[in-house]
Structure formats: C-alpha cells, structure tokens
Length: 50
Picture 1: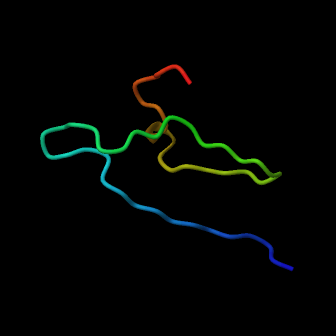
Picture 2: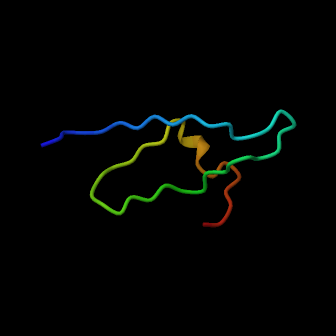
C-alpha cells in the first residue's frame, strides 16, 4: 500500500504586464484526502465568488 503522494506543479499566473494567465479559484478533492496549496494566498486572491 502507498502512504502518501506529493505533486508539485509550477505555472506562470500572470504575464509581465500583470494580465492573468491562470487564476486558481478553488481546490476540490472528491476522496478522503487533504489537499494543500502553498502559498494558500494563491487560491482566489481577489475573492471571486465560487
């Protein structure tokens, strides 16, 4: 059996001009696992409605 898995993803969030390329609104887990995002402030920093 496996104990845990770590997935590390890095992507550009904005262009040099400050325009959004990718905006992370939320993280969903459909199982019983706990998902962490670091830094936590990267999730929905403008507080858009989910």
